[in-house]
Image 1 (cartoon, rainbow over the protein chains, first blue to last red):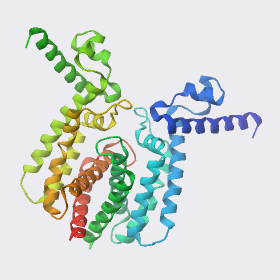
Image 2 (image 1 turned 60 degrees about the vertical axis):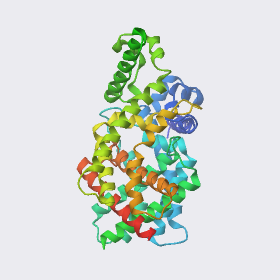
Image 3 (image 1 turned 180 degrees about the vertical axis):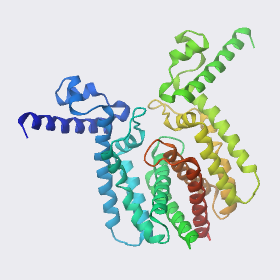
Image 4 (image 1 turned 90 degrees about the horizontal axis):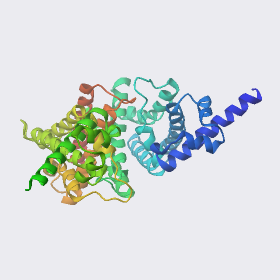
Length: 202
Length: 202
């Protein structure tokens, strides 16, 4: 790599890390490229030599968040009790804990919308699909008669239901719940959902 | 009421209705008081003689949305099959349909955040709690041993889970699902959750 390319690559990493810190601190709405440019020491316009646009920048930060989420879920899968039932409960709780500990970065994953008519790039789709494989495996063990397509629909529904509990539970809204109570509720409802899914599949 | 008060009240209703149309069309981020003032024919600053601030305006629109949601859920409760199990499924589907038909107004209910350190006014809290009573009743019939406090926690969890499925299903994201498939998934998961909750309570 030439010196110029090396320098550009280093600046690009600086930019993405600075954006990550800014979103973590101020939320997605607080991300200002002007402030980022100042922080990494380049001209305002030069930011767009490093990423195509703000969408790409936010998606790059999102990929970093998703990779850390993926590590947290992997750790939850590996621990102790290997029963698929309890593995799914641990995954749900690990998701809740990750969201609580990375509130603004996690929110940004869902708040961000591409500009109209712009498609998500393939690398971002891949990164967004990764965490689902953790749910998919234990669910397949519990519902062996379902086809891969049916399983992926069920995995998505289960994820969405847990996501809803986490999202509303952590919001500063009426449905806000203290974290220990929220974890208990999530564990209870995930166990109930899986019991019900397995019973109906028999 | 004096003529001046009458005129002010009419202008206030005009303002809230104009804000509702603007959110429905452009989303919460597209709400501009300058455009609203022009639309109802008053000076920019005069908007703040009608509502305290933008938070109040958004909450007033929210109360109208919640009232229409409440009507949709009431209709779902009254229909056909009186079994609490199926009533809960109908409520979940009515919620999904309402969100799909009122996408931006429904999103605004959840996207809106009060300015830091400002509390929600009591009238808005009341309006936000109303729709929960529909879930609370059939759930109480299914789980007769739970205390009112436990029931309201379970009602909130069930609502959050369904909300998550609707929210991610209707988003233009990876987990987006066509409406008929989403309705089928919601009905299936709600039945499974309730089966599981009832089985564990016995």
